[in-house]
Amino acid sequence: MRFRKTAALLAAALGGALFASPAHAEFSRYQPSEADFATCPAKPAGAKDWTCYVSTAITGGFTIGTNRGLRIIMDQPLQFTAASGTLNDGTVVSAWGALKQTQNFKVVTVVPGTTIILSVLPEIEAKVVGLGLTDPDSLDGFKVKLQLWNSAGFLGQNCTIGTDADPVVLRPQENVTLPWVFWFTPMAKRWASENTYALPKSSNCGRIPLYMPNGLDSFIGLPSPSGTNTADFEWAVRHKTF
Image (cartoon, rainbow, N blue to C red):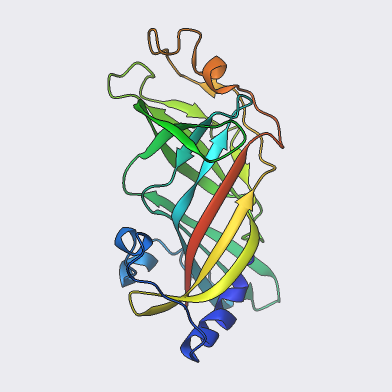
């Protein structure tokens, strides 16, 4: 994603070309505050400028697996912080902050190839665990693993798709960005999608008796190559210069 467009969009918002709809459900999920910047990476020594970007996914989800029938829906905010700047010698540097999620996400079944929900799976919940930036000089990609959880403990305590050594690489592509206001705070709203990421086999995952007797990989369809999985995001984006 092109985070550096944010400053220009905020200027447009402050100038009056803004959009807001406080009655929408997204506003009950996310209220901006100074705490958004708590996980910003520190400004490096020798940096002449340093800007932290906070991107909060207020809705969206991941449709995963070759069976194309399972979706992790972001029904709670997912907040990503990272920063970028220029050193005195002109070198562009970036740094990872954090990926925060307040609650586990719901997992649902969908009509294959769509986002139309058929049923909620109470047996499974999901968390997106951030592992860092894909490239040290760019904010355009980041690494994650998808952690799956079952309240009865059948999946185990560390059931993941992707690992620290073999992460899932996401490079969301910007679709539309508009100046926006969230609770009287000028920001930018960005719609983005990622349709090229691949998923490996799951790791350290048990089986849920009767429900998925052949295991998680068979149930979802893993590994799943690039072009099979999709992700869509609506980000609320703001920044702060240090």
